[in-house]
Length: 582
Ligand SMILES: C[C@@H](O)[C@H](NC(=O)OP(=O)(O)OC[C@H]1O[C@@H](n2cnc3c(N)ncnc32)[C@H](O)[C@@H]1O)C(=O)O
Ligand SMILES: Nc1ncnc2c1ncn2[C@@H]1O[C@H](COP(=O)(O)OP(=O)(O)OP(=O)(O)O)[C@@H](O)[C@H]1O
Ligand SMILES: [Fe+2]
Image 1 (cartoon, rainbow, N blue to C red):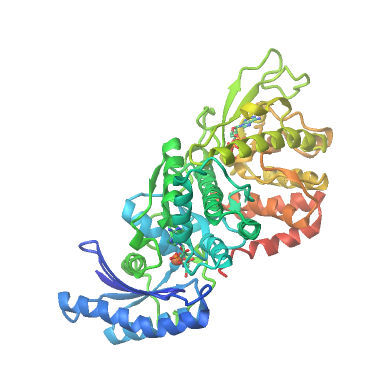
Image 2: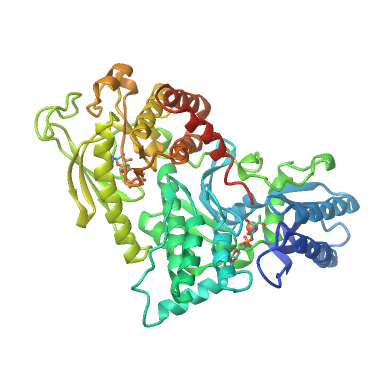
């Protein structure tokens, strides 16, 4: 099969020919280069209306020269997301070409194309995918017939966040490559790279935010900090955030493959960090070559061919473009049904091993109990039960200054807030010892499995997590990372709970008993927005891993509503609507 692909969601007018038989891709692109500032939608659309016919013509001519008049078997186009005025031009061109050639039309989601090209080029079966593009930043994993959003930016796309800074300092678009070059100069110079500016670093579960860091970078420049130093620090922070959430996604799903996509993926430092993180975990990493990373029609043609082969083509009346087209809206017709969620996360039985307890940040070692009460419900004295030692290990991928700060701050936060939460009536482990310089905590061992490995065990546990978060929020504490990996479950037989407060013990059956762990990202806040974000993170982790998430989510929200504030549940609906293409 040979497919002609057309791309033009924002800046790159591009056409491509994909020949599935030889697996070869010919790409013809014509970028829009704004005279000043960022991308102007109207100017971009004017560019598309001139350049799209030219690139399509060039590719069609080459195809017909090689293969004759029946060279093309299908026409694929970017249906969204993107700028409406640009998408409309692409849609019109694709419809009329498919009509003229009398071949099927395929509507491709641009973000899914960014991920599928990595899967195609790497040959990976079932990777987690990090899309690092201009207007987007998200983590995707295949589960239940769709690409689920495991985590995403809550505001700007990663490229846009960087470009916002370069516009502020008067550099032309696109800023990403200039920031990369400036950071490299700084790293090679005599001042760097021991120093690092202190910039906001915001991750919440597997979601993240860039708005604070763009503003802080702009302020630093206004304060006279040399631009090269800012570029270096900006990259170190932004890419460490992306690498950290990618590692969390690997940890949550149990996946062992990561692919990278999107224009920002052309950055060497980002690729280096992700490669280093994957090597340290024993995971495989792949980033396609640059011509498949920045916006290009090659990726549209390649996915278009897979969709066409699966019969996933569009009747003309259903071929409307969609500027807000989300990757998780796409029914994945072209691949098999195996979920990215593996092993223990998918609910495998058996005893836990240290490997199971390896989180994204820390290694957790279980120490044998000191005497009476091991595995007992009545852990009355601190010495009675088992203990765990949690060590936040240094991460070679991130700058040593940032690494030290994060490990120290999170160890302190976890020790303090685990105990405060407990005093507020939320089941959490007792904290026996905090060794801050070594980023090491000694905690009570709670539960016998992660909720991630016990999700199919009924709705009672999800409801109890709802109640715990409501109590936590009432005490002015935000968990910051309440995924199903950070909830421990006690099964009925062992009953190794968490010395639950009396009220909890009455509400729950032993099988529904849960405890919250991992307060490293916790902080004090009474804001409805921050509380809603906790609920969003929990629900995201359930949607990404459960076979049938909806009943669990309903029970979780009912549990929250029974104890907590309805405003938070209302705000949750708003939060869900974020992360759309802007
Ligand atoms: C919807 C679609 O229109 C949009 N496309 C898009 O954002 O173009 P893309 O080619 O994937 O990414 C462009 C971004 O990639 C950044 N970029 C390019 N080279 C870079 C580099 N070496 N380092 C950092 N950023 C880089 C640019 O600064 C720009 O922000 C998207 O995929 O989100
Ligand atoms: N107090 C505890 N009792 C029993 N098991 C624990 C305890 N603390 C941690 N674990 C186990 O170790 C795993 C990793 O711990 P934790 O989540 O605290 O580390 P992490 O590296 O911060 O993880 P992540 O960032 O991936 O959520 C947990 O999922 C759990 O299985
Ligand atoms: Fe893109």
